[in-house]
Amino acid sequence: MANEGRRCECICKRDLTLNIGKEEQRLFECGKVYPCTIRKHFLHKDQYKIYGKEYALSCSKEKFDEYFQLKRSRYY
Image 1: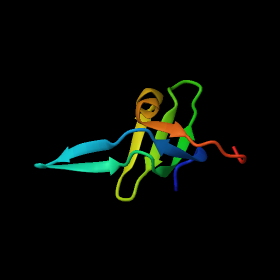
Image 2: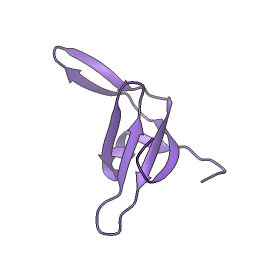
Image 3: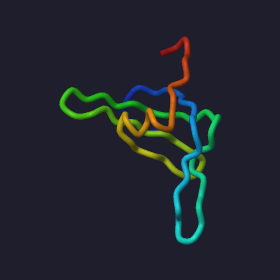
Image 4: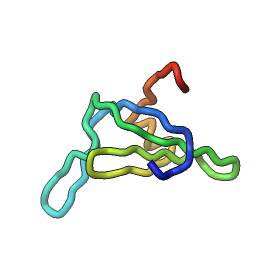
């Protein structure tokens, strides 16, 4: 993971799908754990990046909260 920020893991709360051409692809699967980074900035909104098998998703806190939940860990 090349991006700077706090590295952690998140759990997908519901499937995240995307239509690519005529096919619908599931990018993130409900219940699975994915690595992510959180970049906090004092002037801008926090930015979240979630790393799936084939795709990485960058999103705002609002979109992150809709689909993901941070996994609790004793390290962060």
